[in-house]
Length: 408
Ligand SMILES: Cc1ncc(COP(=O)(O)O)c(C=O)c1O
Image (tube, rainbow, N blue to C red; front, side, top):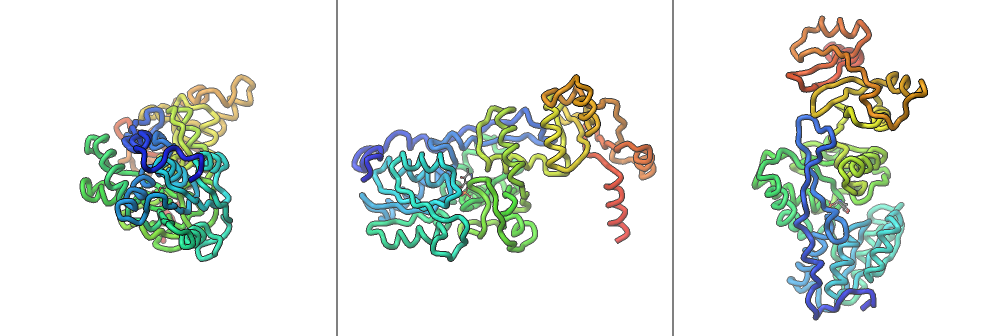
């Protein structure tokens, strides 16, 4: 046993393991979430900082019960991140040896944290795919086969992984939301969280939509939205996105997937910290970025001009509505930002309300085609508002696209 472990198996489990799960759920109030109320489950409050502590504990305890893992045994796992940390904590707490096979893109601080918990790390290539002997999962399986008393945890195929979420994460969310929930946004690494939550919500709230947020480059979005297996690319976001469909990942109840680029994920995670004080990782950025799904990109009056500029740049739009709790209070376009910055009196730190135009002409959704044409012909953007709530912007290109579709 490594000298770094916390206790030996014969001693009582350290209380830290009882802190896994039962994480808080908070409402995000500083983001414009349109008609929805948006909540986040703070899985970073688990002892090693991620949701994976839940399944790490559950999979080890299931193997203990089944006899697959014996006292003094060795756990072997392939992990690109947080499962390794969760297993390292559980293995140290329960006195097992742990060998982790880690692709070389994993962040250094996590590797150091894992080693400090006493686990052995085997770093392997991240540029090879399934079937290659150096692919992290294939390598872990072969190390497990050669290790006496070895138990290959295999998060990608272990049914206890989704079960942990079906039995803990799902019921916690349901209770914390007072049994009132319309949609859950999830990422997929092994698929344990998604499968567990979709099994649970299919029972208690069958109308609850399961939405996948996926890094650009992962094959999962194409599979969900277009039923095709595309070529995998690469991405920097850790923990989610896949180049294959894990056997435990049941995507059958996922209606829609959003593909989010690295830049947007990282910027959103930073935004979340600045606005809500939530220090979350890049995968949370991917999940959270969905609120601006490209159909309505907006800013708040107290957002900085830099935030507005970044949002326009990422979404490739030249103007954004300024919304205050769903109410339209102005419109900001590139020239407003430019004028403010260029005249020497302003900076990118200034609030959007200092540069926006608040003299706006709006249209109800029932407006006629001619009313729309009149606004567009005068060089303005048509702003559609329904009972005080912003619905959308219509530009000349939108109109052209609409007409083209009608002709085709
Ligand atoms: C931070 C984080 N979020 C989400 C996931 C994906 O969860 P799952 O493996 O249950 O699909 C992972 C997996 O490593 C993760 O590290």
